[in-house]
Length: 146
Image (cartoon, rainbow, N blue to C red; front, top):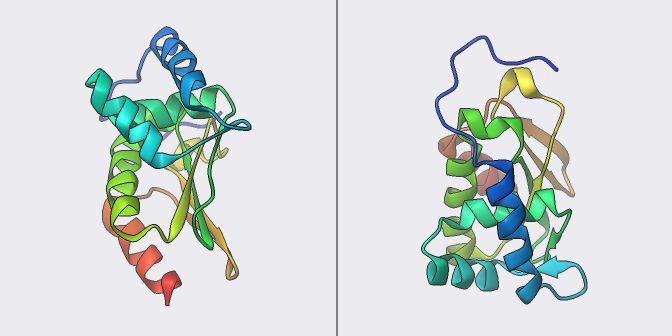
């Protein structure tokens, strides 16, 4: 596994914490899928960021219910150290406004040296954003939504 040459900017959520949060997700799972509204409500009830539940969903290999023609895959594994959870929180906020894409957290996208890594899948094919930023995600989603 390659890692970025720059220093980490964030802390990982402990694996044991993500595992216990994954168990909390079982209450809202339907056919091995969870929805963003249900996950957001759970996060608000527990006083945690929705990104932590999205990372837990990746660890539990749960799918987020599909809502749009675009799917944004975000590494919620090693990329946490370089801001992936911030990207997931940003995407969840954007999703609540537009509902034009699906958020698909995954444990690895095999682009560790360019963390945080995201892929946008749709009719256009696959667009890789690595390293991804909130702005690059917004720009890509806006241009692909047209």
